[in-house]
Amino acid sequence: MTAQAQRREVETVTLDLLDTQIVNRLQDGFPISEQPYADVAAELGTDEATLIARIDALLDAGILTRFGPLYHAELLGGGLTLAAMRVAPEDFERVAAQVNAFPEVAHNYARDHELNMWFVLATETPQRIAQVVQAIEAVTGYRVYNMPKKEEFFVGLKFKV
Image (cartoon, rainbow, N blue to C red; front, side, top):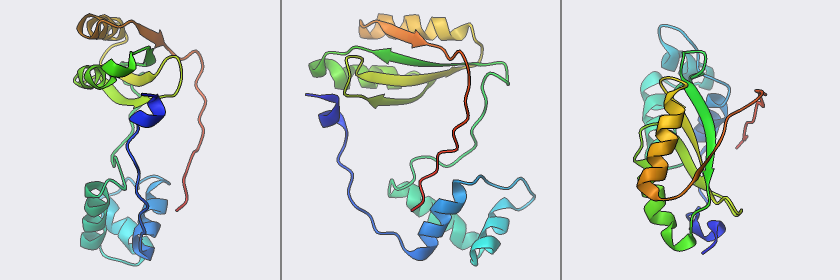
């Protein structure tokens, strides 16, 4: 089975105007204020309770997969790296479950490539990266290719809906 086949089917979803506005607005960041939800709700012409309920509904439906802050682990003294593995297709689900069981795994995804499993590790210290890589190798029986960044670039990727 290819990595392409491993990906779950995505159904087409129709959002109403407010949901569309919420998704587009949230991609531009969230205000730092005493009442950030109320501030965004006012921008969108709704109330705070409705905004919170709509965000919860978008998360429950899987339209949004995550809503929360993004931390720069390295500036906080932590470690961050991209890792990949070459996993036998018949073993992919087992290995994915084992890798995802590590709390340091930020996200994990399949790729149609020789290295077919890719994930991000975020750790409390830079030294912990090597420990987690070794632990994943021990549990899964597969080599982990650690690819730490050499230089950081910011790409403001947004998906207008």
